[in-house]
Image (cartoon, rainbow, N blue to C red; front, top):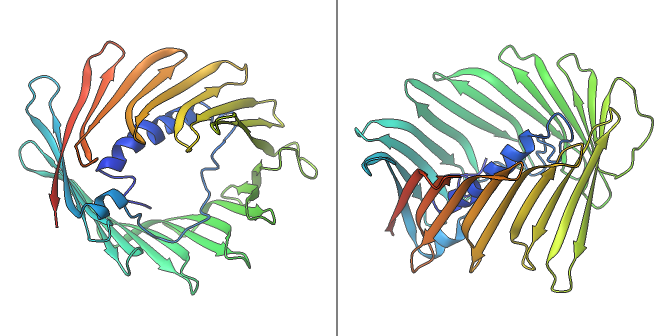
Length: 336
């Protein structure tokens, strides 16, 4: 779990504009081809990300103020705190009456790693506990509620190269809910992922070899996913993910990138090769200015960002297809 790039602050706006839309797009394909392998825990280090912009400018607190779209009055406020290493360790959301809606605190055990994340939402409290092995990889992740009742957990094993070999999800009774096993090519890239159900029955295979490997069982869904990249003369490039399975489903995802790997466009196609989702981003000095989300060729949302002179995010706005403002948010900063 990473807070710096997936919480409030400058990185949040990019995540909302890109990753969230990517998830929306991927949702259209989960019945077809799963391009993202949702259960890849390859790193599994329990580390929080450094936000270099915040670190370099000595930012210790980011306040996000969300205004009501009708009367421009304060609607919600978010408080995001960082240490001098640029690590976000605390977040709190407050409503217009000053009441805390949500809080989240990470307990760091060194510069980057955390062994516990505690959060509170309304009257409920939630805790995530990371247990590490001798190689500093997570061997178990526990999910607790109100305050110490475990309702979910994951257990992990690793191969001789310290890469994730298996992930088992357990319910509150300690019974298996699902399991994933992972194989890799010699260069360390993913080769195959196997999904087992609560009865430990193999139900799905994700193959990344472009072609099926071995014998395909009729009762098991096998997805074969192939990634190809084509470069243009100016070093910009296209990345194509093509997938199909033994049930007759197929789909594609095509990404367009700048020469310095900024994602300019992402398009998803269904099994009939019809475009379903597209999102297009415009940058200035490597910062997202605008991101547009299209569904079946029609504009649905536009995300606009502005920046301060020092490069930090100043405002964030979402408008619908008719230009009506849905979200209007500004950013304030405190420094060490």
